[in-house]
Amino acid sequence: MRDLYVKNLVGEMFPLSRYKVTRNVSTENAARTIKVDILLEEQNFQGYRELRNKTYLIYENETYVIENISEVTTGNFARKSIVADHIFYQNMKLRSRIYTTITGDKTPDEILTFILQGTGYTYRLDKTGLPDKITVENFGNNNPLALLQDFTTNMIKGEFDYTDSEVIVAKEIGRITDKQMRYEFNISGPQKEIDTTNLRTTIKGFSTQNPDGSYYYIAEYTSPLAEVYGTLIADPVYDDRYKSSATLRQRLINDLTDTLDFSIRLTATQLADMDLRDVRKGDYVWCIIDPFDIDIRVRVVDIEDYEDENKDPVFTLGKVKRKASSIISQYRNATKAFNAIYDPNTKKVKSTAVDTANISVDLGKATGQVKESQLPFTTANATNAGLMSASDYIKLSNLNVGSDGSVSVPLATALNNGLLSKELFQKLNNLQVDANGLAIVDLNNNATIQNILNRLTALENK
Image (cartoon, rainbow, N blue to C red; front, top):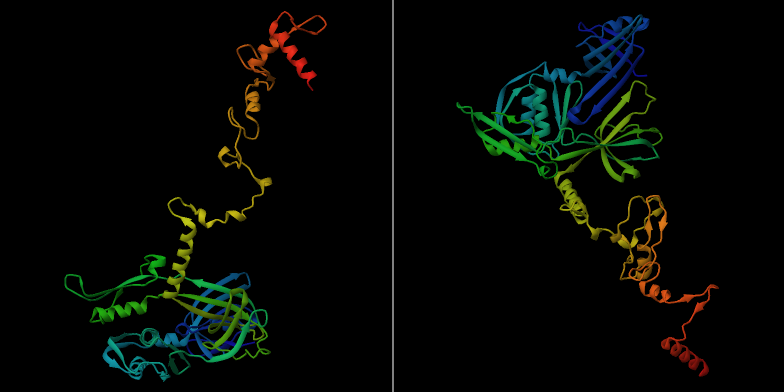
């Protein structure tokens, strides 16, 4: 278990117990923070009482300044939750101040010497990939921490780290290794994260105010990401150190991100067996996570570990920068594909995008009413056949249905069609039937006799 001590403002140190510590170290501004939960008990009574804001915690031989404390007490139970930053930030931000400025072409060494004057820190500079000269305008008049962050982040696009007495500056701090973190082999539970919290797409800058309130130098920059995300306005920059709109605009470009950060958070396991025990912040390792389609060398940008040395640390890999050009290209390709299938005028999917030959419909789950125009066949009417003949359609049309659902059949007359046509009704009406139900033929009717003779002749000729 890693030891934890509290050091009060007069230099007295007390050991602590019954605590949990989460330490976080990051490549971003070289952040180094611990969070502590500690219970009050007899063994750490004196040390517990010394835990106050601006006192110090000693953890792994490094000093942290307590910046935030919350305490819960119930009866004899008490617990404090603490957040503490590395003492480097207090020393560089609050213990020293630079009131002068420098202007002109300066070497990185000259700028670092200017920044660290009076802080008690020396520096070690790796010049690989750094410019020989940097043009500065009225650089200074701030705390050393702010100047160091401006120098590394904006001027050289680099990074810094520190020890108790030294500041290390380089293009990148860390090693390129062949170590692998592979899903379901030596890592588990990966989480992919996309952060757009601080995304902005346009920014303005102002320098040297005139007596009437206007500014002599004004610059504006809009990121290509505005094409995708629209106008997202960043806080303006007011800085009288800039004496041209061109240098002020370059400052705006540096301040406004045109990237999105993708990071992957995972827990490393079997560290000793997989030779990952010595992976440090800033190192590059191979990350292979099949579910995310990731097989690249990425950087360890954040490590979270604990007071229990047997508990696996949590690594954040990446903060992979997606450039604006890549995002714009993907956006345009997606828009092109979308426009190929969607008609913005009708707000419907285009018929050309539907493969009608392979559409299948489960009619067993269909509901609603089918329109006549949607049927693949025609219906019958009085003159054209469809699912039935035209004559059957006429007969069905002549059926009358009462309000009670009963069907009444209309009979034919000499003038109107019914179940029989009016022509057939007239022919049947000419038949006479005797009392026995036999049809009577009037032989005095010459037409009838002639008809019978014609039939007999036809039979004899067969």
